[in-house]
Amino acid sequence: HKKLDLGLIVYDRETANLWDYSYVIDAAGNSISTPINAGHKSDRGAEIDINSPLFRRIKGTASVNLFNSIVPFDTPSGTSRFSQLRYSANATINWQGKDGRKRPGDIGQLQLDYQSPSRSFQYRYSGSISVNLSYTHNLSKTLGLTALLNGIGSGHSSSSLIAPSIQERYETRTRQPEFKLKLVKTFGPKK
Image 1: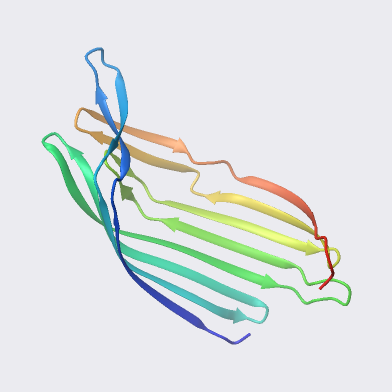
Image 2: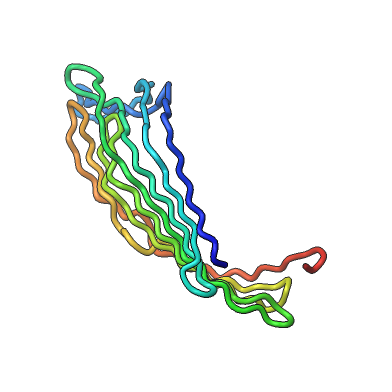
């Protein structure tokens, strides 16, 4: 209940044979994409994790990832390397209701996820944020009803194609918020 956990991971990761797509315009003006081996990328950074009680029955967890990413990118004179500072974070707040005599307590959860802008071989992507909510009402020790609301947050994302012969910008709807209602029955011996 009162325990604080901290974690630190430092890493140096190399990825070889990085597959991506190369876009060109042919003589007829058509855009053609070809899968290619873009080379390799490097990620060097650290992940910090924390897990702590916030209040009675409420616990929080968070993870922050800070790293330098060096990726191949396409230029008119050939492939070059692009260095970018990237960061991502996710956090969860859990609420655990009081257990009853015949059933476990209800559970509520709020999740937040953030991804910073990024770059690939011929694309530049905007950052994104997403929020998910869930609530579980336990009807008995083996039967629970869960309501989930996912995909709240950034409804749109943008990307830019920055190939040497093509320059385009895209705005897309990432996903609609989604609501689910699940009835879950657990089989086996009762705990």
